[in-house]
Length: 221
Image 1 (cartoon, rainbow, N blue to C red):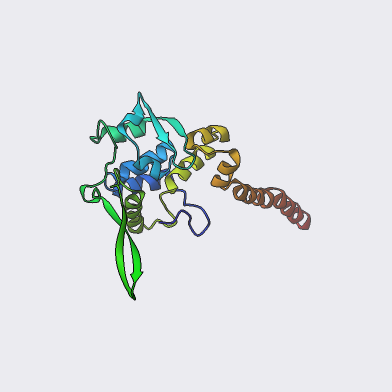
Image 2: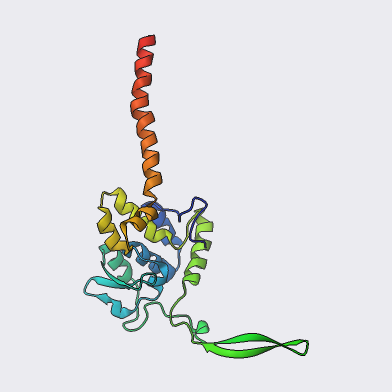
């Protein structure tokens, strides 16, 4: 599923929509997407979580894009979700399925005497944990079932950031949770300039312009 919707950003889901989605998703995809939401993390970062990353009510997220780590407090809804399943005590929380653990051979096409042959050039080690693509596939199927449009694996991180902003949480605190490198990148992520423009129009036509129209109507009467 693409990172962005037709409007340029992954769709933000409400709390009720998230609940609907999680009720339909199967394990482990439901827990992975919950983790992405409650920690403000990318799906790829959640897929690679290890049991050792959970420490005394906190979770250490290894950020794939910035190559940094962030520590996020595990909130009670997330603790309850984790407590309902038997996660591995060591190693990856979401290990790859057995059929994906085979070594993948890599080939190169060679042309010789007008014919083609495949030459093995190496081997790729088996993937040790579930892939974001697998989560994406399950998410796509569930969103089609529920009629949700514009949703992607990036929806969960963006939804949390938006919910926190709408609740009045300062941008710097949101940045610490999501792990954005700068306020500028977070502002763009939240699409704040476009939202501010929309609010300005509503304020003008609902406030100043509305008062002017009321005044004119009063004079006409």
